[in-house]
Length: 136
Image 1 (tube, one colour):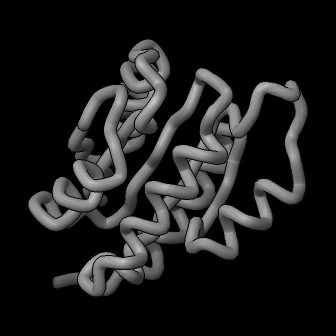
Image 2: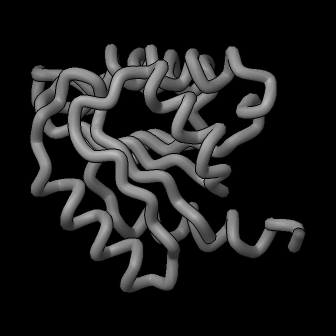
């Protein structure tokens, strides 16, 4: 499965992206890494260019909710990307605990999963996606 891995617009952290890339590659995925500080427009353009099977967004700085909402809305506004699976993980806010209202808003906007720091949940999500993919 080809995965486009990206940080969010305001997040300059890279260690999470390095770790996730290694994790995803170790589990047999092809990874296209965009790096940190990727705004919604650049993310959509990269998805159109690389045609990934899934997008994985990671946030460490605590602004994942705001940045993730912008990102998923930009992807869903592009007809060719409307059905592209999008997973958001990491910190959604600075409160220090999961905010159910934020998760619901992200899901309503088009995120397929909001996983926090749960790599087992990411692995399970991707395994289900791999089983349901139709070969080209």
